[in-house]
Image (cartoon, rainbow, N blue to C red; front, side, top):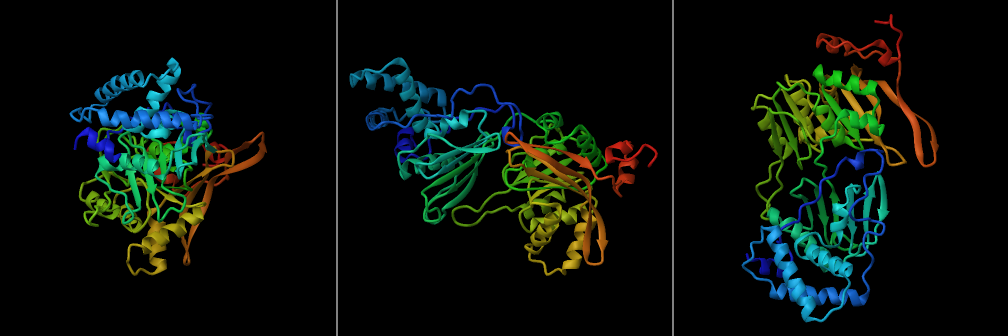
Length: 469
């Protein structure tokens, strides 16, 4: 399809690349990022009627006069042609604009034609971690864990739909009343969720979780205050000793960031296979096979689920299996992998406490459709999972590890847990949570595994005296 046709349909123009972020602002309390190119408060002043009329007039003329032979995949060439046409139209219309006004108008038009429209500045702002479009007139963004309403607005529902089509069309996806909910991934890895009417009652909605290309390391989490050096040493020892770890937490609590960091503790000579719904892991490993699930096509066929991927993984001789997030029946396959020689596996799941995590795992195993007794499921969980790491988003927007809990085994019909480290909040001052994660004074039962791996942890890490061991 020619560029002209694509623009007229508003749905398949090439996507402008999103600028990379220097740090994962969404999972930290790091100092403010360097001054962004665009300031989201205000990101963009609401256009007056005269400005909107001018913009619409110039845009219609741009589309009508743009050469259909332009290569739609060459962003630089498209921008060059757009700029040339734009200058001609401004001159032909005898419009008197300052240099700044002219540049701003062109960038807005370019964003509408080949980018993400009004939300382009938010996506280019490295301090913004998430963008949420709640219909055409309400656009929110997250910065340093806090939600804020921006001054950005779309013209109407149709304007939002054009941006949605521009996002999903290059991926071979389609959004309409028959398929009103779509999950997608931008070329830079950012996750996108789209919901349109009649499901959404506020108009078309877009939620974009921005992707950072910078690989965060454990030192970054220590600097952000998410973990302490002692906790980092303990978690590194757990991964090296091939303990099975589940990272638990709520939405936006930083589970994937922590999973990335823990995954990079894996030895370089191990074969890693990861399964994700949308590829977010960033491992600096050579022997790493990435697998991504696939939704059904428009005919409702061709879906590849996480369960399918895990079953394929077990035939690939992995040393480690990493599941980006367990959401359903794949939890059963993950537990079976952990129980059949794939020690050191890692995954995440949504839960508010380690105890809730056990209940979630039980529920997800039952979603696999297997008629298993609850006790059998709990025995599977207690035998497979060694450690639950609870990641929480605090009231000040910061992300912290709040529990590190050992799964000790079974007592009767109940899985027993023991907290090894707990976060203690001491105060809430000037909008900031004051506290620290501290040892409970308990030596984990899995310490012999860590020692067999040749790792010596001092008793002081667990709040014990030197002669305890």
